[in-house]
Image 1 (cartoon, rainbow, N blue to C red):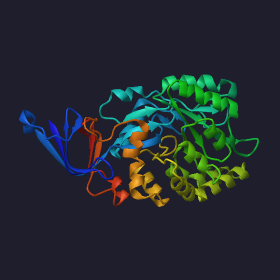
Image 2: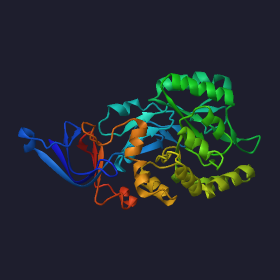
Image 3: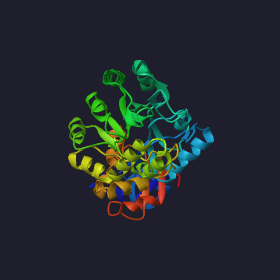
Image 4: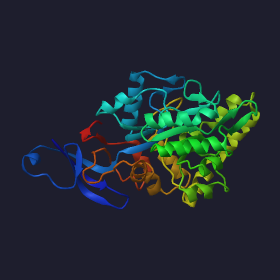
Length: 361
């Protein structure tokens, strides 16, 4: 069967076409002829490339790795929200079996988190000391899909606040080793202190990046280091601060300040030319399926709607090295009733979801 997507196909933010056909699971803009033309299903509306959640965790809950049934439910929730390409930014679970399922989103894995001993969420990460960082980065570079995930900062119980986790020399050596093996490196960073060392050491991306300041934003822009703000997760900071205030008041105050300036931080980074992409931090304690909410948060922060849309579609796919809706690409797309460029809230209600040419929703 041939699928005919009719209406407005957003091949790019300004490249809008009237028709797209899916033949053998692939996109084509040439109308099928002959026997193929006799069996056509038509879907009408506004079509976008499958959305990207560039920071999520399939296979995790608040306590660590989950079973396959729970991982499947997480992936299906993302799929039904229109997120058909996921960058899994660290998971303790083996989710390779998902690659064999044509009905589940495609995943780009960053292996397992690499954290300093007792400086991250229990059961999530390889917890190591700096002398072992290069070896563990090499291991995860070989296991992942072109990415490695470091925990750049976390609460230091002795200091009572967020502090950097790794010495500069070890970070430089580890990032160089990942690049030698063909992997890019990203890092969880809430606070300010670790950012300059990570960027000057050659890191490719920073997750959350709430600690960006007027001193470090130009450095990110100059080096082309991307950020994935995960604003739907940053919204939880006041709750986290309230829970830890009695024991760590400095940390709680710091988390509140990072939260208060979150929109200004993201807008300042965008204005400076820092690449910004959509990620939800789904998994752990946050629900899956929040990609539309994150796009809306970027718009609330002051990013123009078309650029926020690109951060989960055309731009995000190019950044991750995956195709959008060009000729011959896998037919991963989402169809909406209205133009999402005019109002990104449209993303919360997909009419149809198509994965590898099959209508799955």
